[in-house]
Length: 204
Image (cartoon, rainbow, N blue to C red; front, side, top):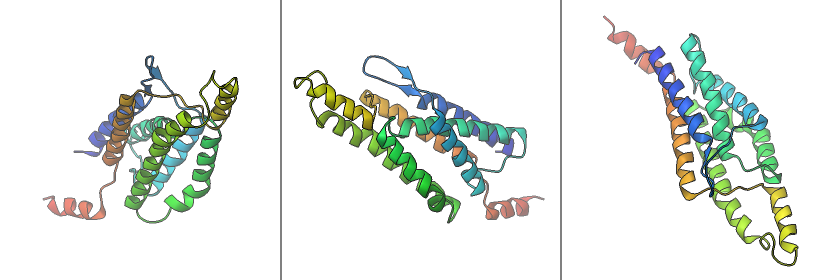
């Protein structure tokens, strides 16, 4: 596969990831959740880090720039999928990532960077799809119950996380989006030096 073909395939994978990541299968229908300012800024920083560390090929031709642009879009949508809902929990998570990201991700090899990102994605998924739903249903009385205490508890819960539940299959849609992002990253993975030498030796 030539570089232009890899870039085109990566662009399509990233575009599909961005499209699927925004689909939210809520209990009463389907919503599309576009990313916001926080996710967009983080996606730009992440794209710079991936190119800087060699996990994404440095763009030179038009197809390379298109792949990186679609990669930024997909990264923003995947972050919208994985980050906690707006509230105090999101603020604490984003602040923690911002403080520790450069030191955690800038050292080591590009493979270590990708494994670090995979571990972070797993932790964010556990927080959003496991921890927050359990706390939401078990902390305090439900809204409209407890002689008004439920409404107070609802306000407190929403101050920490404005949680909007998904149908169980909604997590499968999110997994597909993350898998497509990983596929796009693999297609943008620059060839190793050993591979380049092998290609040169194989030429007549």
